[in-house]
Length: 471
Image 1 (tube, rainbow, N blue to C red):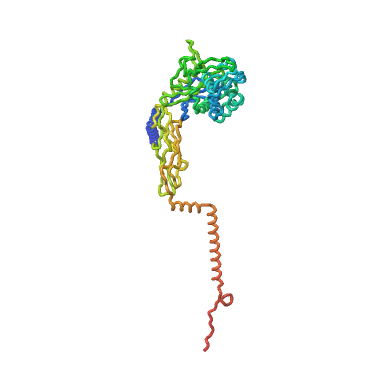
Image 2 (image 1 turned 45 degrees about the vertical axis):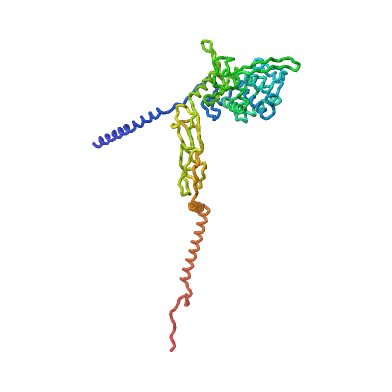
């Protein structure tokens, strides 16, 4: 009978456990219903990047640190060094430069050129249009000699500049991107180089040019090298002249590149509704469908990237100086806490379906309690804004008020700290030990005096005998 009762109690416990557990399991499943799925995209290329150039927020990245061949994207670095030479006063945009045999000879017959001739003279500006619009390899070499004295010296300067910009996986062998196994870069490094070039006021007007009219050139003896001619961009996002179906009205520049080992490469920016995006594509193919229609996937991929970025993300204020208030405990003061708030307002590109209220705010304080005095504006912690594994911002948390220290509490703290020092404690122990020794000695000496005294008599015995009185 007793065993039956125990068995009934056991099954009752099991039933109660299952009944209690079931609602929690159901709740855990439904919590996932409100999770925003972060937008993703696949681009048919060896590497791709989409970034906000103003804030450096990365919307998409794929193999951005893989070493790949850049082809004529190299010319962005060459243009950057020429513009730096102009800014430093070494060259001027209207300065005339004459093409030399040493500049033209290294260029293969099948390479892209502006058909410049030895002895032909053009301005620095005209040569830069040749470089960026029609991807003229010889124009890079002509400018390289003008800047550095030789092509080799200019290439060395290109590598030094890449290192200075933080490009950790880039090495140049020539000025133009003609293939060499030791001439490589990454999507991220090309972004860094392009960002530096865009900082120069003359860069984007040239890089965003659909076509440019090159003036006629004449030799010293009156022989005409070329009559006036129009250069059309290789960037099909800007012009349909070399191929139709890719013009993107929001696109602005920047540079194409193509070799067999590198594939199709492209860097471009686009601006829509006040927002700008920059895309990098390396190693895209040209594919042909069953109807014989070809697709250069650097252009179609860039259009896909831009549309995805503009359609799925919007700029939102995710944090303001008034949107969060925290408290930090304060010691050594009559006031026991101080209010902290974010140091600045923060805007970020968020998926359009993600509400600011869904973001997670995580506080971090180096210490749970700070000592007074505290000054307004002191950094007491940090606040991180995130969603899932994506971290959108980390800002300092600043004290919003001054908190004065209490003299009494500071004095008590100082005394406590003083007496808690090991050397002070050892000294105190030594003093107490000396005092105890002295007290023991004094007490011992007093006992001896009472025992032996000063009385007369034999052996210190004091007699009360006074003798007889005389009559």
